[in-house]
Amino acid sequence: MNLVVVSNRVAGSNANEPKTGGLEAALVAMVQQSGAIWVGPRRPLEAESTVMPLGRGKLVRVDLPAEVYRRYYEGFSNSELWPALHSLTERISSSADDYKSYCKINARMADALLAYGKWDAFWVHDYHFLRLGAELRDLGVDRPIGFFLHTPWPAPDVQLVPHHRELTKSMLAYDLLGFQTDEDRQNFLACVRADLDLTPREDGVVNSDDGHVTRCQVFPIGIDTDKFAQYAADASSNADVSSLLEGLDREKLAVGVDRLDYTKGLDNRVRAIDHRLNKEPRSISLLQIATTSRSGIKSYDDYQHDVAALVEDVNARHGADGWMPIRHETKPQSQPVLAGLYRAARVCLVTSLRDGMNLVAKEYVAAQDPSNPGVLVLSKFVGAAKELDGALLIDPNDIEDIADKLSIAFSMSLPDRICRWKKMKARLRAYPIQKWSEDFISELEKIRIEKLARQSPRDVGESSSSKREVEGKLAGGASHFDLPRHLSCPAFGVPARILDEDFTHIVDLGWNHGPQAAPDILLGALNSVDAFPRSYQPTTDIYIHGHPYMAQLAAGMGEVTPNNPLGVKVILIPRLKGG
Image (cartoon, rainbow, N blue to C red):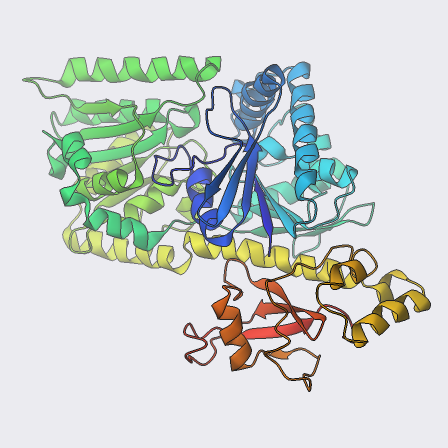
């Protein structure tokens, strides 16, 4: 499936540079492998070109008015929506002009995306673009549009932004809404009931008053588990890892990795370290990688100053003889370096007040030495807490609880550590980042096929003479080079995509045009031109004797042959009814 990915932050073209958040880290591999186009605004002072390659895919940046973008990003997105979605309503700073800018940027992005209107589907990410689906619909886009929310969605009793009803309604323009946890999904459905007086079905499907159908589902984001484990195994030779760990006692080392964001609870983390040191001097060191975030937003600048002051105070009171209990680093680190730090630390401390998932917790588990794993101390208010049942859960607002769990973690026996780690590592392996993206894209593909079926000439009431004309041309052996003209809007509303060959010479004229497994010789031809359906791109279109077919990856493995070295199983489905 040809996919357009949309987010506020687009990755740099260097896939190995440090990632600033879970969204960016999650999408890079998928775009590299799938050939998707990743579109987002060009941020102020960003020097990257407008269009750049990323593996098999592309990165596209859209130029937007600077002041409107500032109000959209610093204003409504991060001064109103961000605290509201994390249930921190006391931090909401509201402005009518900021919301107008938010709407303008969503509309401008929709205009830019019309250039990709013939692609199969759109996958929109995160709270910056709650309105984008509705804007695309207003422009006449009928392709499947999916949306994934990386943040939590609060309960309906949490006071959201002034325009929450309008935003909730706009989100129902999406065909597929993905959430990190079932709690987030249920909270959103409760808002649909309360704000829009609609009754979702038990399976999370919402039928809007205009007849549009929105599926609300759970897709808990994962990580590349095996890659992180390999990074950690190779870290002993990494000079940056050695430099950051110099002078630290690994048996007493806790690590934290976060953006400098008030939702991460770094202030309470430092207070908990202080509390433990008051009871047991020199019993713990904290290596905190705290990447500066959203500079220029007053609440973030103030928070960064407050955390720095707390660290300075704790180090001044508890440090001695050149030893400092907290090493506070604000420079971003690459994934291989982080993996090495995770493996070196006896404890990982996650104190988020709220978090959609928290991939740091998963990365720490993946990076551990199987023979001597560390302990994860994890906020009970993050999505990962619902999966990582081997962690020690904390209330991030309770300083004493954090300090006590740190004591338990550092004194935990090796057999107990191994037992807890094995359970969590198994969960990570069962649902890695690849499965997350595959599942979401697979659901979009199902929606696409349903939409195509509904738009078939027989279903939309096209005249019989028109249908006979198209079908007669196909039956007469029209060349695949003529098909886009025959199959433009009359058939599906989308032009069929052409591969380099129509494969007529591969399959004999006795080919049956009904759905069936692709023969081995055709699999070899598909393989030779890199046209196999993939798990991350489960369909491709081909032509056989002038007829368009959808080559779809099917469940299960096929026979491994020289023509089919991966043993994939491909089913061919006619693109026209009765074809």
